[in-house]
Length: 213
Image (tube, rainbow, N blue to C red; front, side):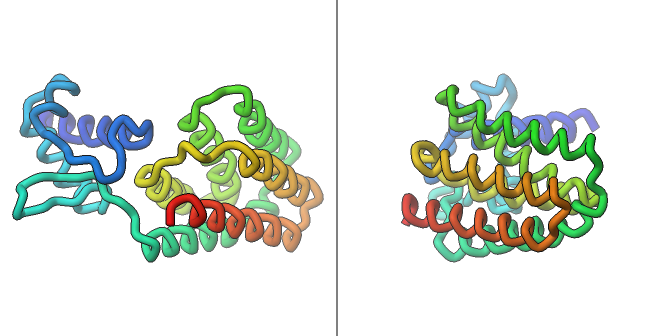
């Protein structure tokens, strides 16, 4: 049991390193170096990498006997964008139905937190705050499983792509798009919310396509 807990802890630590871009897409993993950095033996690192490989976060080459951080193809990126959009749009009606003044205040706060991050030159923070905003919308639908699935999908395409260019003009546009989504929820306007989220998703996909492919 203790070994399994250690393996899961290492698994989470490696995912966190991916999220923070301490290890980046295409990078080869040297197990001995990673084990030393995490302060564990090679065995839990190997088991964690096996788990991550099964989930598609890392690739294993039997010929070279090594693991590398997975790089998304255009097809994979398209699929993840589409799935993310479907999950969020699918949550909108119930989210608005479950909306209260208190919950609207939380949504506004999350949008404002992302806006205030403009003064902080930390891409990971902006990523986390953007995820926090969108995941809360999905969470308002009242399904923990739906929220967990959404978070996983969102993390997958950001964890496996550099996001250093998630700034500048596009960042300003995201703030404006978040504001439109919040206003739709304030008005309890389902159709406006659906349109705002769909437009935001389309703009995000076009931006990411322009810098990755």
